[in-house]
Image (tube, rainbow, N blue to C red; front, side, top):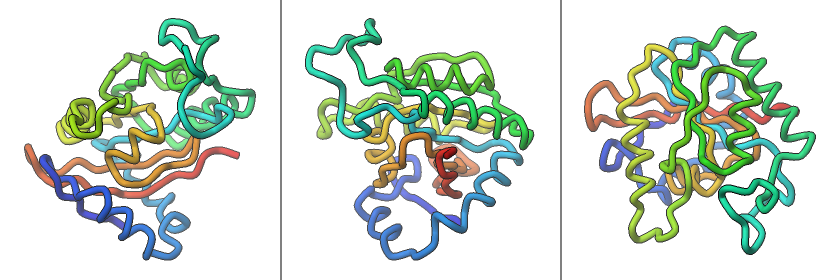
Length: 199
């Protein structure tokens, strides 16, 4: 099942998408196969929320520092296993990863590295905007997704709030959301499906 999204480069307003998802019973259960099939075709974007990092919601502790992982929320044993299992699923299914970008936060970087599907680069476009009224990073993320043509998959490891700003939904930790960029510059993108986090 696919959904066409409209916005500056083809994105639907988040609130509209959230309403659509809430009235589509069984959608998440039906679309994992479509999502994997799309990744095998290439030219798609896999938007991944980092693995399990207790307490599982909200941000980091007060006084955290981006250059010091000990001050941040980090993956626990389950989160690390989710990342390894997701990478193994990509390899087992034969998904070609051409590029992998991660938020600079340690839980995202560790997820990306443990997936072991390619060299990891950092991007601030995958960090939530501090000011929702000035969504600079969101626009950068939209441009990243819209510009992707493959031939393989673009993997983006990010945060729940980043995905919420982009799509109007908050994936579970370790969950993957698959997007298909439109055929031309500024064309609509399609939300192809969601892949549940590894158990």
